[in-house]
Structures are given as C-alpha cells and as structure tokens.
Image 1: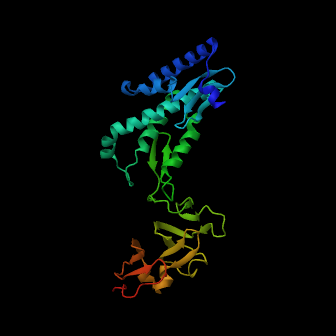
Image 2: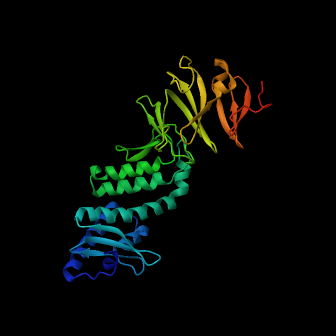
Length: 312
C-alpha cells in the first residue's frame, strides 16, 4: 500500500478535492500568521517532491503523505480519511518545521531572557509556538492529548515532574525544583499533595521495582553503579533505618532498586552529625560533607568509609 500511494495518480475528482484541501491549509497558515520567510515549509509539506515524499488524496484511502526512505522504503507519515483529522495532521507537520526554525532563529534572544532554574531548553519555545498556532485553528480540547505528549518530552530528563503547561498563559511553567539527570537508570517519582515523594519506580518487574519513601526527598544524585537520595524523614519505613529516628540522611540504592546502605548507619553518626549531608561524585567515591564540618569518602564498590578520609 505504501508503495502504491507513493506513486499514486489522482483522478480529476480526487485532484479537485486535494486542491481544495490544500487551499484551506494555506488559508489556515495565513491565519496563524506564519512568517513569509518560513512559508516555504507550507509548500514543502503540500507538494509531492521527487525522492522525498508524495502527498495527495485517494477516494479509497483518504488524505496521505508518504515519505521516501533513504534505502528505497516508503513510510506512511499521514493517512487520514477524516477531513478534520487530516487537516490537523498536515498543519502539525508544517508547524513542527516552522517552530523548530523559529526557535533556532531566535535562540540567542531566548537564551538571554531565560529565567528558569534549569538549563536552557529550546523545546519550550518551539513546543509553545506549535501549540499556540494550532489553537488558532482548533479548540484547546482537541490539543490536550498533543500537549500531554509535549509535557512528557519536557519532563523526560527529570526524576520529578518539572514542567507543566499553563492553559491560561499558553506556556510551560516550572512546578518543582527537580534537577535534570543523565538517565543512567529509569527512575520515576510519585508525589503526594504536599509535593513529597511517596514512591520511586524503577520500571522493572523485579521484587524491588518500587521503593516507598516516607519523607521529603531533597535531591536524587547519580553515580556509576548506584544512586543516592537525600531524605528528611517524617515517618520512617522499617527498610530504611530505625523507625523511631527522625533526621536527615543519605540512602544508597543500585539501579535494580536494591537498598545498599545509608550514610548514617555506615558511619554510626549521631543526630547532629547527620544533619544536612551533601553528597558529590568524586571518581567512583561518594564524598560526604556535613554541616558539622566532618567530611569523608565512601567507596562505591566496597560500600565502606575510606580510611584516612574522615576529617574533623
């Protein structure tokens, strides 16, 4: 079917329908106010191009756009019988190209005005451009699933959901202090209504695929073979430490969700010693700095405090 549509010859009636459809798409793009210097993307997506793609209308199949693969394959990009669904699909493809170049052209200006807790992410601007533009033509409800997929992309590199889309302002806004990670392991955090982590999910099917957390997690830090979470306990789970204690601590897990050790029990710290622990990766070691000025290193492999590293 893909190859058939790639070389499909429309009848006079089909071509008339296709031309009418193209006219509406072009009118939509003018209504959206796509800049003249980027209007070439409209024609690029509506005209068949040799060895690139073929588009048109088939009475049997509907509105189509077939991409030509670089090794002779044919890939269905758009195939919709419903007029409005086809309209949305073609406009979305056009606006995707327009919005990416729009962000590239304006990147220096956007970077100067970037006033968020995380590093610059150009997707914020071209996602917003696409959403706002589509909303000129389609009701917001039609875009909700599309916006949801953009939210997933924006939050891909955060343990805790960091971005959400504000319908009133039609822009992405920060909703947490979560830091970006490098995705050495798949970890997702579940928050309660107080924005406290209640669960970490590792996405595997093993018995330790989920860890229940009973306190506010300040940070999640990644290392080569494990990750650390800094927890201020309110109520403690038996698998963490003594459930009668309430203090800050660093808990260490591997990427299978196996609990390895906690800094407090490892160093036999007292309450005051364990407060406000910070952990940094230092060439395979966990470097621990405490508010009491006592610092030490923990070997990731042996899980032991290294001799000679404890300072007063």
